[in-house]
Amino acid sequence: MLAWFLAAPAGTAQSVSLVKAFPRLTFNVPVFLTHAGDGTNRIFVVQQDGNILVFPNDSAVAVDDTFLHITPKLSAVKGEEGLLGLAFHPDYRTNGYFYVNYTAPNPLRTVVARYRVLTGDPERGDPSSEFRIIEINQPFPNHNGGMISFGPDGYLYIGMGDGGSANDPDTNGQHRTTLLGKMLRIDVNDTTASEHYRIPPDNPFAGNSSGWKEEIWALGLRNPWRWSFDPPTGVLWAGDVGQDTREEIDIVTRGGNYGWNITEGKICRPPAASCDTTGLIFPVKDYPHSLGISITGGYVYRGSRLPFLAGAYIYGDYGSGRIWMLRYADGLIAADSMLVQAPFTISSFGTDQFNELYIVSYGGLASVYRFAGSGPASIDGPPALPAVLALEQNYPNPFNPSTSIGYRLPGSGHVSLRIYDILGREVATLVDAVQPGGRYTAAFRGAGVASGVYLCRITTPFGTLVRSMTLVR
Image (cartoon, rainbow, N blue to C red; front, side, top):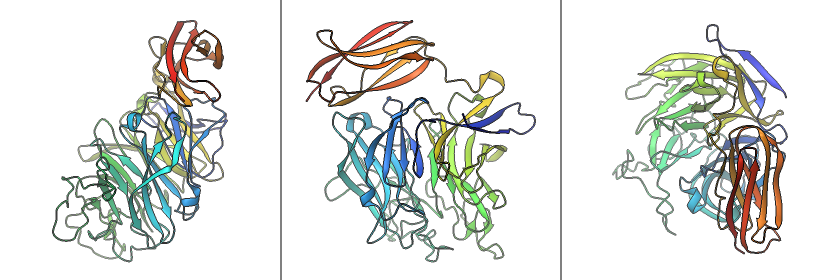
């Protein structure tokens, strides 16, 4: 397995390397990775070319499915255009809603649209179900942002670049009458044919009489390409891509003004000019272009594979491939050091349902990587093993024609996972192999199988469990 290694700073007694997380899969211009939050432990990879791939979170997986294909809708699939973001509704398990961010042509614009998963087939989104939530015209083809995410408050956040070109020629970052150069926050839970979203009443400019856009949550951003919420704290961390001199990390708060195009990082823009910084919020951290040319915002690490990174913000740089960890508390940087030098361009970070972190490579080495490590506490070990054998209820149930089945192994052993009809006749063998302890997901595709009740049976050295499931045509 290919791996790249760089020791952590002296005195940490820790080190990390990068290994391919899914070495048997291939990707084309991947720009994001996430999970559905539905307990199925599947991975979704967004490709700029208009495809979203889905597959089990298993390093041995060799086949993926196309969850959604919307290439014909895109303005382009290169540069900073294309399919750029994906977010699953907090109630996805019951309503099947997911949201995408892409650029569309004539006129060039950002589209945030809702789609629905196909009924009975969790591996497919319904391409005919598009419901456009918001469309924002783009004056130039760059600085389109692209990240969307639901916050802990249940509202949808949308990161918007300043509209592109250089130096923010229309000063969109500072103008409250445009949605460009902003972090937006909208309510997509109450929609009608005429109102595709609503304004949360506690948005900073909700109900204003000055003509300011009520969708705005924060302003003064240049191109917040990747950002994330830290689940335990609710803090929104953003990497805002700089122009000529500085890259920055911001903690984005309600009504905050992060300075662009008055400032770039912590300096005035242009560097030789003086500027009025009254009311501006300076970044938590900025760095010069000698270290990198385009920040890729990351995540606060909340996984279990690397305990020494717990609570640290992990971020990287698209151009230089450097990946750093940052600890920040009480308004001060407590630690900031480089973890590893990746030999590829970093388009994004992402997490699975267990908060383990992944790194998405965009260029000639397009793939998905994860951290491996060595040092105290077996930090390269898997997450804590389940205490007992478990066979989860399939989802969805009833289903048509496909469903996902999760199971957990407390240790290594031979696993048999088979489907039987109600008369005890074997219908399908999903797993027949030795597997290490951990959490797994298998898919059953009932094409050609009649409606009815079926039994899923798992047999292991730790016992045998059976669950019933219903296929409805």
